[in-house]
Image (cartoon, rainbow, N blue to C red; front, side, top):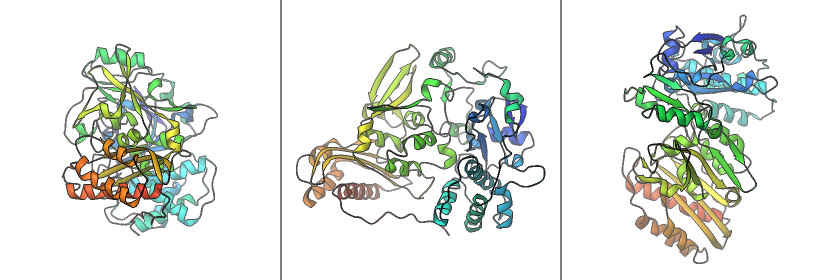
Length: 488
């Protein structure tokens, strides 16, 4: 098994479940740092050259990801670029040069991660059509690009300035010049595994292959982005001997927008969802920008967000109000559908049987044409876990709701769908009195939990505020914009 690192083929000579970060540092590429080992700080950021760059005539792209929570065995035949591979023989990459010119490096520990995030912005901008933007838009783009990188010296001002300067540089990429001739790309991998039959990352390309592997290795764990699963390795120090990677399974990576329904495969990343639905739901895109970081969204998947059963997952309440259903497959070849409400049984418990897995999420496209809002409350504006997630969809006129859909996440052991409140709102004219009654019902309909992120009282107040805002926006009221607090 080989992986391409900085345009050179390297043998995966250890355990396939070893993280990319450990593999790189073991082979002397120590510019990539370990800070948190959980995908939060960005010190380990590297770039994946999109597989499309190896097909002639297709668009090249580079996606950052956290090397600390990605097993190297998932990247057989892929092309990874680290900070050591950015510079050409005679000059630094624009991201590196701008960090030098703008004094963007303080203590230096987090600098490689920032450089990689900025390099991805530059590369993807240089590869695509350059768009003239005003200074505020460029700054916003840079801040979004580095939202998954933490500077321990609070040196964001020169780093942001470095990003702006890098994006203003005329740059012709040299990072993919020799990639097509790479030795690693000659491999047509269906399933990659180690010599030890009890240790491996398997890479099926179809549901049939995946079903066969699940049957053969019943104890194997399914992995897509690994943004949650790999924390068991890096934070709980557990060994996962066998993983079945679903990233190449065709049926799980499809996103189809039909005339009536949208079907999103369980292995489709948040990044790809954002690209596909950007023109259909600004509210969803705004929420996705606050779901983890760029590095996380480039790897994290919809199926993982549902499958881990977490009560603070952001996507379940969203697709509850969009009338979404989960399509579930099994090794026997049988498929079934489940409402999202019925999918959750208790804290981190779902209705999935031992031989079942999520194939896709499907919802009616017409729901995105209805009024819908998604609000997230968290301690940080970016790259943070929700304290409360409110999802709302209303049909009808500003004075009369004919159909209401309301769901919350982060309140209890499972996502909550508030049928009683929905029925109340559908029963009368949407007056101030009805809005007050609906808000008062929340304290009866929900018993919020208290944990390290928020108290029960705070969560209830946030839920009340979110519901009131959604109803007043539906009624056409001009409300103050929710502003983001950013460090200079």
